[in-house]
Length: 271
Ligand code: DGL
Image 1: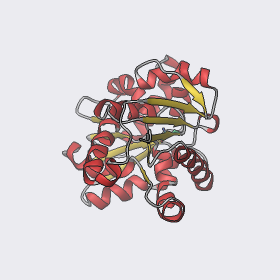
Image 2: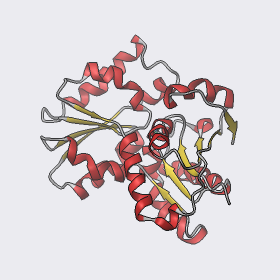
Image 3: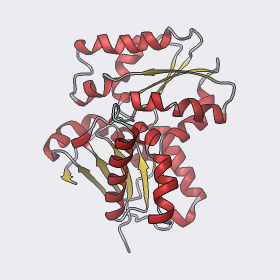
């Protein structure tokens, strides 16, 4: 019996917040996480670069035996997923699947906004791609989407400076810029898998009536439903609850920082 893990990919550490929810929800499967820390953050890179980096990482996960890979990264989901699904998989890897985090989030966002007005915060790559605008309006044509890119947040988080007082300027600035776009916003989507680490601060910055939405639970629920609808994929997955972690960067540094995202100590290997 093959090990056949589910692959989980992010540019760096952020995907670990999604992996946490997936592993809690579906502990029976084997998993392999890959963070492309050597080349992160992805947020400001061009479409071509993000596509190339993401494809390389997905192909590496396939080479480790994955049949299913989750891009637990909004930037990669926005900039690379569609091309990989349409151009690469059918010809080079028929039967293998790559799923992202944008569609599952867009599908359910209507449940979290009474005013039908949502603020989306993400990297420049995610925001400039307009992916959330397009995907949300596919499912909810009556929801108004306001977007705010937050280019300083991932570097602050990756350097573990996000909860220091020095980070407050950039946290307040992007939140203010978003809220100035509309008084009707009652739901703020953290459309970057790093941002859940900012929750303690964001809860003090946004008024209480704002629903601050993170993606871990949403993506985990969507994966449960995907596997129920796709027994041909579910049947291929190895069971045993193993979890392996890899980084394209320095494993020691990864291990030091990863636990604040994953909620437990872990040991990684070099990609
Ligand atoms: N965590 C990633 C996301 O969800 C992006 C971080 C980066 O800029 O590399 O968008």
